[in-house]
Length: 456
Image (cartoon, rainbow, N blue to C red; front, side, top):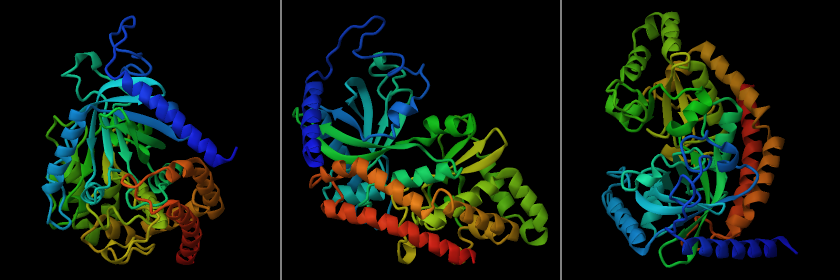
């Protein structure tokens, strides 16, 4: 039996399974110690450690079903319409607020989670797709958002995870960029979230699940990643966005550094200290002192490693071009602020014009993005950056390795990509997907050569 028939049979089977699950929405079976069906410590409670092997299974395309009532679905769409209208006519404007959460039922591997908070997320990806009537929109999950309304789901978790993000693959015909970029960052020692491929099916209230397409499930930085990567989540975690996120002297504002941990403590002194050291007069009058001060507050080595990876794979949608898509974490272990990349759907893309990816030389980056020129102009730091580029292209990003990885991911997700349908996809047919995967392979080879030329 060929792969297309197998895929079709699999789709039919999963659709029938989902219909069965949808029919038992809100149905309650009393289990010992619990009043909700399927509830167990390992799968639903906050007692269990995050189960990465299950939630971020790397060996298959996973599947999540969301089941809504007609009223819930209609309310969610009304909220989306209101959200999109708030920035209509404003070119490049950010949305005025985040979308609201709605209580839905969630199914995974035959188990049900109850009154899960689900909302739309994102900015440009949400505005562009939403205004075009494309229903494949990025989503955010909060497992216990409605615990005050339903005390039975107090501290509800998804195998130990409270918050999760679903990236829709906006502007990515390969559907791989978000995942592959995060994997490369982590493999090279740059802290980054875990990811996995998921098919998302949504019952909008009529009892018929719709295939919303292949998504990338992304671990939320301030939920589980900090403890996983740094062995502690007690430090201040920030999600910068806005002029202040450039760290330039023009428009710097601590209000642009949204706190994601320790929110009750009105203390941004660590960010202020980094800014003050960065712009101190020592940079021109006493370089060694400036370097020492910078290294006492900021993980300079980690930032140069991040730049080496980001500039090699080419990701224009972040610091140096855009005032978002990174986190900062003040790590209690060494008292340094660490750089964490985020939102990589535009990676492996040279961009163009004002949205062109930063070159290896970084000479086009001005002092309005001071972290890059102030550090890279130091010969010692430039040498570290160069060495990291060499190590990266001859290790995690070696073209032969990337060719094999892209081929493996292609074999895993191609059937899910081929199953996407009009109105729930960014693909222009399966041929566009195949072409995009081929382009990724070519890109790896071209960047290897470009990096060698730069180093020479």
